[in-house]
Image (cartoon, rainbow, N blue to C red; front, side, top):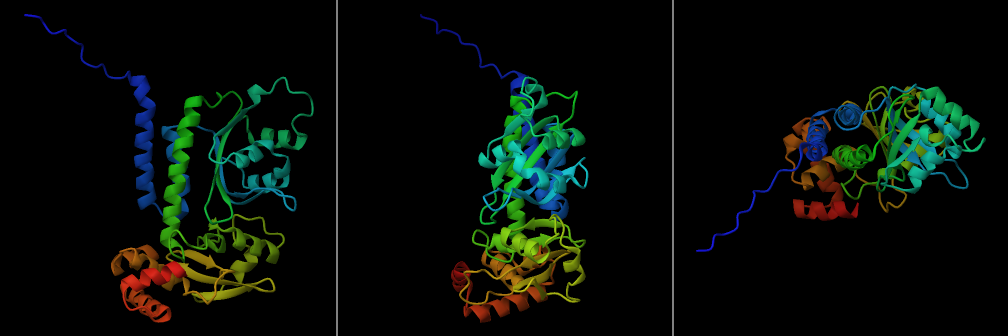
Length: 347
């Protein structure tokens, strides 16, 4: 009788090989919980805190929205949040943006993690780095840099996250770059979903470039390019990140309402729970759109949310939600949810 050859049972992977995957999995679960439970004005910073404590340590970080430069204008940061950086950081960067080759490389290679370290540049010829860029990096301790920039669909802008380590700290490793590159797209996906819950147009087809969201103090959480350009034109000294003080001072006493900025741009303003939602008419609209809250309520209802869920999401009462839905049905000329979905797709 021939004995069957014996085989050894499969051996588990060594713990070090699994550790980064476990850390990434745990971080993404934490991120999902933060996205569900944290107020939108605190969500991005809490997400970066997860990254810092669980995956990739850093001394300072910067994130927000940016536009690429072109023949008529340099790159520009429109809004940002930061950990450990001075309040003047974004304003200083805007003045130097045209000379920042690292940032330009990140904007040219969307979705790719870019790294740079002063340790890698000891043999560069004198003058290879613009003096104002070198001084900026020294002033803020930007010795080791890692960044990723990704497109924000339909907003006209890009979303970026940059992190830094100072002198005496190790460079960012290949493993850290890989974990960073996996984490940030998840972060952006959760952030866009959160904005869709608050936005004034149907998810997937909203005028993101014509929308902005700010907290009660005027600090911007999101801004689309058309809104940003309108504010820049109306307030030439506006540096971004927060709404212009003159605009805040001119806000209507009651919301919803509207405000003329500049000579021809009228912004629609309304409360969005504790936040301020700002929108502009779409340049392609063939007829006036629904009021923003009506459109938000109708969109959520069309996607299967109950009156109670919509009220909680938008910071309204169920009775107000019913009023908005009745108005939306009347203005769109629809009689049921099937017709409502079709009408919203045409908005």
